[in-house]
Length: 507
Image 1: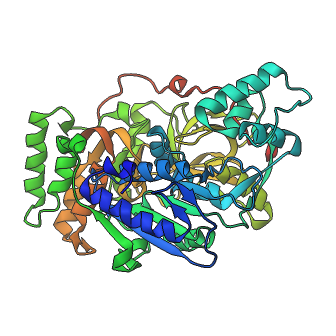
Image 2: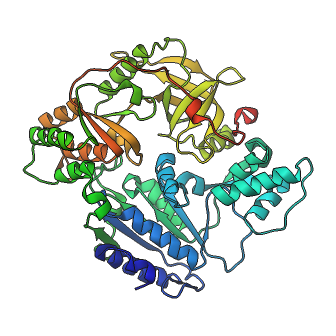
Image 3: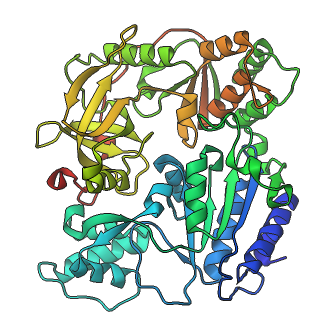
């Protein structure tokens, strides 16, 4: 048992020791901080499972610390320097930008799965700066860049560990130093995957091709990916490769939001009983609000979570109406959700450019205004390491009782977006917000229908996922009503430095 593991609870310590044994078989000795050559051809996959508050993220962070102390080099997806034949690598992954940003905010150097599957190709001249920042080379002299610009890049990297961010701090744009993206050919080493309950079979197979040692962290009480028949990828692992965390830690023990989430495990608890419990908690603690209406001011940054698509569309249109948004254009500050990339195969490079900048399916985006070219939009990608982009956009505003959406902006091809003032609970998995509004009338319908998923009433699984998206305050909305906004939509809170990356010059 190492000093690191001694800080953990008993179930965390047991899982840590079991994972240490797996890693030792792969040539990584955490007890001695010793690295041996990896054993080729041997695949090791394990899963750490636990409900909200059980300490999965803490254990993941402790493993990251121990692995980096042992000498593994973190691969971020931003840039990979020259490799020696004996170097060992570590990647910390999440399925979405938002889930990765939650880890980064806790000091864990995470990136998205997509950014690991596809690596950037740097211009050789600017690659010298990246190698220097990564401590693989001498300080370069680059024509057109002053010593002050390089100093800004170095200072930024020391604080943020982002190569693109550091180069942007020197005054460069993404189109200056990244010339394209390529599918990863060479395998990496150890992969730690958070929010693994969101993985589908295809992503799982991709990860196993890249990582001979793969440790997944997931919550079995969440919703399985769509089209997975209620199963999660770690369900198929042998029992000896699965480790459960049961204990709720002290810092979470007095959290009323988690109390409500864990109360759903009681098989005798019905929907009406649960709503009474929510109301009782709201009288005891202001972190739970038994709300009579949806607060429209919160919807621009954290969507209302719903079960049914029809409810989502109605809430979006109500949001736009009370904000005074015209039908033929978006207001600056309106939230969007990326619904994918509509590009033919011959434009594969452009697709990779967009996705690598964070515009992957499900990404949460705020509209900043029109771009310089027709059909382009300036966007802030929530949770992305370099959040501001300009991209060819197809924006779809769905209407109640209408099959075809209204399209206020449309390029011939590019990133497609739906409105993001409300999202389904399925799509909210992996994300967290400071304040979360759950639209309870939808869950009541699910309860009345009596649907069951993986042996659990569907409404309970929906409620569990929705509730655990809240970091600070939960609004349990019991009426189909919408408050009026108290302020106009804004974008000044999204201002970032340094210079934003742009896709406009590359499309």
